[in-house]
Image (cartoon, rainbow, N blue to C red; front, side, top):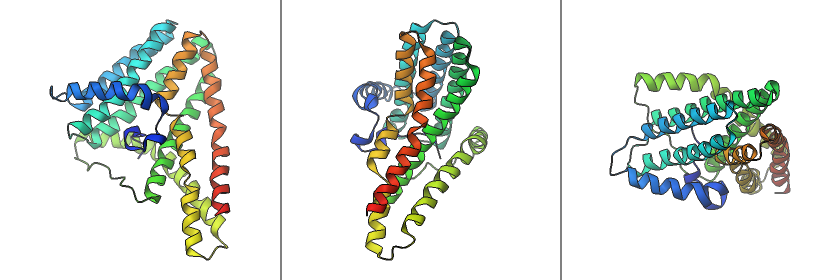
Length: 268
């Protein structure tokens, strides 16, 4: 489930640098302050979404400095909701779906605004699709990395609530096909590499090498928090179209990273 990249659950060296160095500590402080107030984590998700909507509107009106600042505030709130859920013992499937789909809705608005202010609607659409794919690859390969190393990847139990079922339905339409495609491609490549290898120890070592921590780290640093920092910088410089090209450029990294994974597996 592409509900979150879960920076907080990754080893320190494999998290987004901007989160580990800046947004994470601020978000953690905010979450700790909200725990005694019994603020429900979904309320923070809705606050995050509201700030994102205002940022997209500001971007569409070409108020670039305001949009850039609001995007960083959105990132703080986005990093705080999961921390609040864990700190208060209220991690729910509803909250995870809500978080993911709120980010999706805000991304749609941001790229629509970018298309409007640049006049490059097709470029904005292509960049939106590229970013969505990069974020999905990030999430799924991180989960496969954890599974390979026997790390826990449990998801909260479903509550059966109507809104949770509705959000799950949206997820199945938009994200589930991407998850299946990414995981099937990843799973299919390794057996081809190992088809002539009979030694079980070497097969096991190749599997570990294939799920490469460097690749996971690079993908983590293409995450949404980093993306919004880069977008903010482009807005402050007055060149929003540059961000669209940078997103498309990040897409070109995916085959390179896959080739690295396969090279490492073959070496083992």
